Image (cartoon, rainbow, N blue to C red):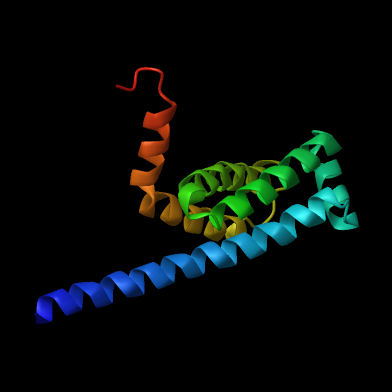
Amino acid sequence: MENVLENKKKFNIKSIGLWGLQILSALLFIMAGYSKISGAEEMVKEFNVIGFGQGLRYLTGGLELIAAFLLLMPKFVSFGSLLLTFVMFGAVATHIVILQNNATFAAVILLIQIIITFAYKDQLIDIIKNLSPDKK
C-alpha cells in the first residue's frame, strides 16, 4: 500500500511540475510572440540586425503564438513543445552566430522545451503514427 501511495505522490509532483513548465512557457511565448507580431521597436531592431527581413519576425512570432496555445491543449502539448524546441534552437544559434551576444536565457528556454517534449514523447509518436499513410 505504501509503495502505491509513494508512486502516486511522485506522479502528482511530476505532473504538477510539468504543467507548471508548460504554463510558464505558454505565457512567455504568448508575450514574446505578441511583441514580434505587434512590431515592438526592440524586436524590429533585432530582426533588422539578424538580416533576414521582417517576414522572419512575423513567422517566428506566429509560430511562438501557435505553439504557446498548443502547450495548453493536452492532446497537442508534444507538438507545441517540439515546435518551440526548433524555434529556440534557431534563437540560440542566432544569438551566438549572428548577434554574437549572450544566449543563456534562450538556451535555458530551449532546455525546458526539450524536457517537455521528452516528457510527452509517447504522445508525439502517436501523432506521427496517426499521420502515417501506412497505418494499419
